[in-house]
Image (cartoon, rainbow, N blue to C red; front, side, top):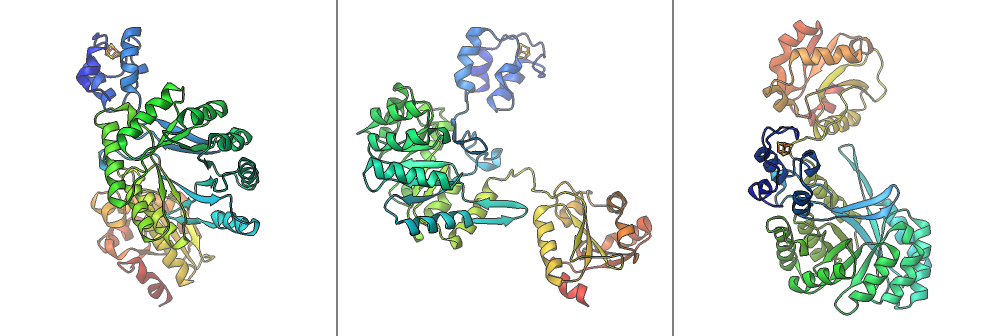
Length: 439
Ligand code: SF4
């Protein structure tokens, strides 16, 4: 991205405010920070538009793999550090399946891929893609294998083959699914580009060093392929960190278009693979292709990915509402908590564990946890009362009491005055709820 001053040089300098910014310089600064679009200025000359179009393009291309509802977005990132704004498109996880697997093992592997699915704080964490690898070297075998797997799954696919003829036979059969074609290198780039163009599919290009990789990108673009994914082929953990960081830094800080593409990484099985995968999630991997992905590794890696790719400025929230837990009735107690997802799901799980029927009122605190919301003035006796009235909680639980989190015991008197309910101070930690409720 060009600097604000470079952008400013190409603007009309009318300071008319039609872009919703008071001056052209203010607009240039927003544009430089990706907070405005070129089209927001209606007075831009054609020459100015052309000059700015390339500099306002995202520093890392967005590449879409898959079709219809089953699409994975790769790239289109704008930040070097997550805390500067956020990372946008979570690293996709692909499980590799080779065409030399026997029929039984293939179906077992597919069934396992479907089972890689977890729920955490209200979000589903799952496998995103399958990578189909040609080990047979035989176009017919690979094509039949790809056809069979494609009929069994809707997941977006990566096709991995070294020979263009083998790739062509398989890719042409499922080109409507828009798979990512992996296997272009210095020895076959022209032929692979021809396949990618003919099938209108994105192409992954690989090289053993970054200069050669940039040359490969240049070669692919000369052949007319624009949807490119980079495979920097790291040899180990240090190499992965180094190469991915250089690629991201070149694309974002130096606006080097030659490396402004999403990064594909092949993750080996075993301990080294886990270390490489966790580093790749944090440091710029866009697509991680796992040779093997045991559930015991998948879960923490997916949680790590979830944490890295949430917006640091917007907490994950649940809907403020009245939640019945363990089939409550009019004689069941009423509790409240906030709508911060992590708090809600922790409390919910502890309530379910208690097996005591209760009503849980979730108060809107803009996603803040109990103590933070209280300190920020977003959890007050008034806001709790309004939440109880909005959901009719006091008609559902008729025993006239409200259990409040121990962290906000000091709200008790004012809450009693606001609601007329008898306030019972609950435990400070949610883990104390089962014992508290049962007693
Ligand atoms: Fe300048 Fe265009 Fe914005 Fe007017 S609309 S202030 S000319 S950038």
